[in-house]
Amino acid sequence: MSATEPPLTPASVRAAAALAGLPLSVDRADAITNVLNEWLPGSHALNARMRAAELDEVMPVTPFAAPQTNQAEPADD
Amino acid sequence: MTDDQLLDLTLTEAADRVARRKVSPVELVQAALQRTERIAETNAFISVLAEEALTVAKASEAMINAGHRLGPLHGVPVVLKDNIDVSDQLTTAGSKVLADRRPVGDATVAAKLRSAGAILLGKTNMHEFAWGATSANPQYGFVKNPWDTSRMPGGSSGGSGVAVSARASFGALGTDTGGSVRLPSALNGITGLRPTIGRVSNAGVVPLAWTMDTVGPMARTAADCAALLDAIAGYDPADAGSVDRPTADYSRNLDAGADGLRIGVIDGYSLHHLQPQVDKAVRQALEVFTSAGAQTLGVQVDDLEGNISAQLTVEAAEPSTYHQRWLRERPDDYGDDVRTLLEAGELLPATHYLQAQRYRTLLRRQTLAALEKADVLACPTLPFTATPLGDATVEIELDKPEDMLSTIMQFTGLPSLTGLPAISVPCGFDEAGLPIGMQLIGRPFEEGVLLRAAAAFQQLTDHHLQVPDLVRAS
Image (cartoon, rainbow over all chains, first blue to last red; front, top):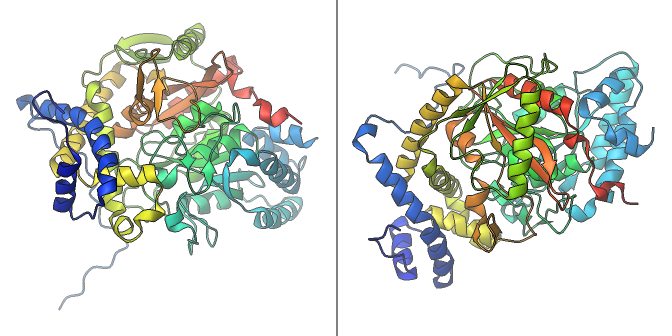
């Protein structure tokens, strides 16, 4: 978390889980809160870096599966 | 030869002796099976395919006696991480979720190993679903390091690392997302290669993170890894991420030496934030290279600071996507640590994931620029030696515990995020006798350069020849 953002709480994690459609029992929220509070400061810092104007043209690495050559062409109607 | 002598052969030595009918595949399999029993306390295996391996070994022996050699690995026992499909054999990915799963076919890499003549001896234990780096498996037992069974072997391919280190197998396949081939290779004193992404097929492998996963060879020597890569590399239309590009002969020119090799050391990173004995071993390894005619030079990669966050984000979001169904239907079948990571991964915003993927593009550009000045980049494989079983933190500096998962990825993440090939090579031991690994990172599809550099190092050193006491103890 950045200096201006308070740490997540189990209540906010449960709210985020509801947003994600993830059923989450009360006892799970504590552990997940700890993990996210460990991860998010770095993640926010990375986001801040990637917002820099000089990086506007940087595209994400994502796999786009090419059509396989042995796939049949769709039949004409 | 005694069983110990047989099992001390490297993979390529064993294959050569089988080819010359100096050693029988049945002898190799029997010796290896006895060793699996002797190291049972390490929990390295989820299943040992004793009956099938012996049947195949007898057929393999008959074939070689009749003058037929299936391929370069004919008659040599190897093992596979348990997230790699083997037809009709349990393939659990180290999880209770898949405890009864028997695939109907081989993964492409398993089929290729069989085609090369290898004998599949067993399926190795791992961190559950490969989502972790300690191989502390709650379902099949914590995998234990043969150099000190009170310590972890790294992961997620921990069982494969132990099986090779303890000479229960001549070679192994692991899978590597954020370091899962290289970390257990370093911590078990063996050699492990992460190929360029797309070089080796992932078809028939239970995924962790689609954009970072690759299968990789693990063995005692660079030459053995080259022989395994020769067998498994190549385009596979069954894998959408496979790259249609000719393979090299990776076993060729392995004796070319290191003369003229330019080794880049990344300023402020390669030798930064290490346990002192790791620092010392890697510096000594660089001296070995320079004594053989290599040149070391400082290089820059400016944006490395974000690499741990990017890994955690991608490695959290992608597995959490893959596991959405099981996480809702069978959450109690996951171990607590992996369940927590999967649940946390579902809560990361999509924008965080895509910023991490954009960061990978940036990091790749910068790393490739460094690799214009150097042939390979060098750093430790990880900044510490094997920690006690079950520890979730590690101390690089005294009395300053750090999160294990973040710290262990400090160096392996760079190739994982950029898709570049990397090899871990044994480069020393700490005062407790625990192995230390050095990582070399190469340009895309230049696995041959890495293997030749590693082979040159192994011609000048004997770290890779050391044997854990557990193996020799009667």
